[in-house]
Length: 322
Image (cartoon, rainbow, N blue to C red; front, side):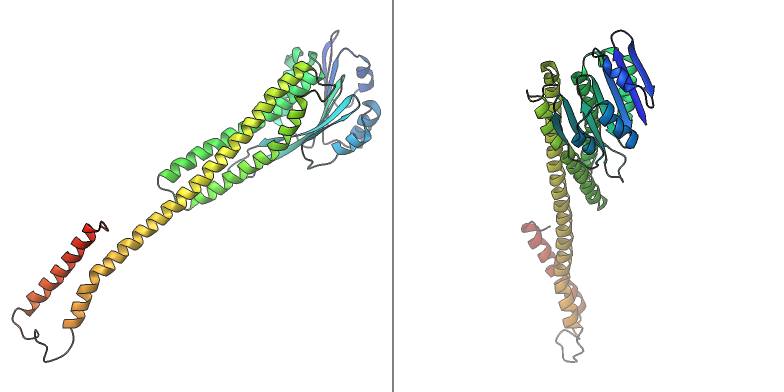
């Protein structure tokens, strides 16, 4: 599937879907052509090589999957790999979408395997905002990358809200389900940081005087995205530490409760030991026991038990064990 926008000063924006005469569009050096390819095949590969005259190595990389985020320069053209990340639900892992981008003075080509709302958003903006296409390929490239990084911000906001909920639960009455939730959110935070970190390096390079195709005003804009990705990494690290602390608090709470239960049961056992001993002592079947035929033996038995138990309770309270 191919969608394209061709902007020229004379005719404005020309948009369409499917193959078109891109070679004629590229002859006008005063405009900008954006071609978005979804699930490209051999025909799209031929367009990249024969019409857009892109480097064979870059075209080959564009058809590979699971690449690390990077940016390379081939003469006047650039090839970059960026990734989007989306939160699908509590029981699902974060979805990662890889996007390959070619940038030249006259055109920008984006390539991806699956349809994504970011491209619908960019398509809508390009239709209603001529300024987006009229500022040049480097600033349009910035607008595309900025929309990509917004997916990280949205996902991070969702994960942060889950971290806040976990903190409240841990400080309240946590149960064993909270451990599963902590590990799930920690895993997603680690994945988000693992995807964002390589893009931070790419954005750092774009914000410096390394590529001829990137103007000074575009470099300033890329610095802003670089700062945003830096913040995303720092927030992800901070939340992972918060989750680790929450896990420690949970285990500490469980340990404290266990100790309280053991302490209670131990005290009950110790308190019942003297009565158990006395009951066993006076329950022996010896005919010549001194207290066996004593008139007040039964009352004496209960007095001994109550005094012994009361003495133990006072001793435990003085030691602050109760």
